[in-house]
Length: 126
Image (cartoon, rainbow, N blue to C red; front, side):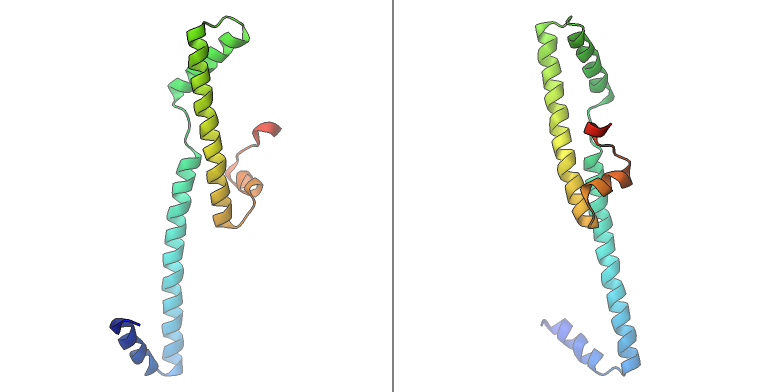
């Protein structure tokens, strides 16, 4: 124990039981506030990462190029551009799942329950 903690402990030893209980309650409250603040910050950071996506311009371009691909009217350079955008989307989705998993673990719930809480649908189920 460092000297400050040791001094504090000796002062706490001198408290009567009622004061000691009040002190303990205050220390526990402080600890909970610190943990909650830290947890909220971590949750906010994870939510920010979960919500990352392509820019609106990239999404529009992706849709345009994908429609051309469906219509079989896409140039080779456009196909390369579409592939790059698709790879970026896949990377974002992989990271999103990783961050969803971390947030679910932090909240002590399943990823499916977290997705329901956040209103995120399973892409394979609509």
